[in-house]
Amino acid sequence: GSVIGSGELINVPIQAAKFGFVLFWAVILSCIIKYFLQVELGRHCLVHNRTTIQALNQVPGPRFRGTSWIGILYIGGYTISGVTVGGIMAATAGLFTSVMPIGASENVSTISWGMIIFAVIGSVLWFSLYDALEKLIAFLVCGFSLSVVVALFLLIFSPNPEYPLTLADVASGMTFSLGDPAQRGAVAFAVISLLGALGTTANEMFMYPYWIL
Image 1 (cartoon, rainbow, N blue to C red):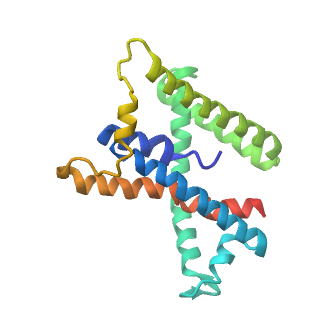
Image 2 (cartoon, helix red, strand yellow):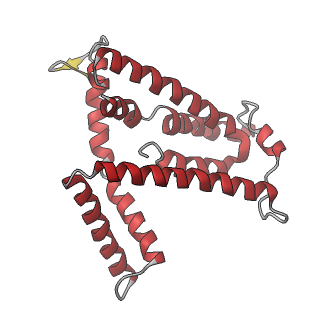
C-alpha cells in the first residue's frame, strides 16, 4: 500500500505524456531493480536482526554519534517529505468534494473533508486499528491494480479508441532508446527520475525491513 505513490501515479504518466513509449524499458528496469534491492536488503535485515539504518551503520564512512551519514540524510529527507502529506490530504479532500460536496462552497467542502480525513486517520493511528487498516489497504491495492488491467484492456480492445494502443507501441518502448536526439538531455533526466521514483525510493529501502522486523 505504501509503495504505490507519486512515482507510479504521477511521475510515470507525466513522462509517458511527454515522451510516449520510448521510456517503457526504464519502467521495466526500475521494477527489476526494486525487486532485488528490496528482497536482498530485507533478507540481510532479517538474518542479522537489523533495521536498514543499523545495517548501513556497518558501512565505512562518516558517522554522527554512531549513525551513518546515509541514515542521517534519509531522516532529513523524510522529515522534509512529510510536508507532502498535507498535499495528499488536500488532493483527497478535493476528490471527495467533487463526488460528495459538503457546505455552501467548494473551499468549505474541501476544508471539511480534509478535517474528516484527518480525524479518521488520526483515530486509526490513535486506537491502533492496524488490522482493519491492513485489510482496507489490501482491498484498495487490489482495486487499483484491477482498474489498471481493465483500463489496459479497454485501450487495446475498444472498437473505436480515442487513444489506440498497439503491440507495436509497446515494442517500440523496449529498444533501450532515448528517442529524439534533440530531447536526449530531457529524456536522460526522465530515466533517472523514473529509476529513482520507481526502483530505489528511500522509504521502501528503510521502512519495509523495519516493519518486517
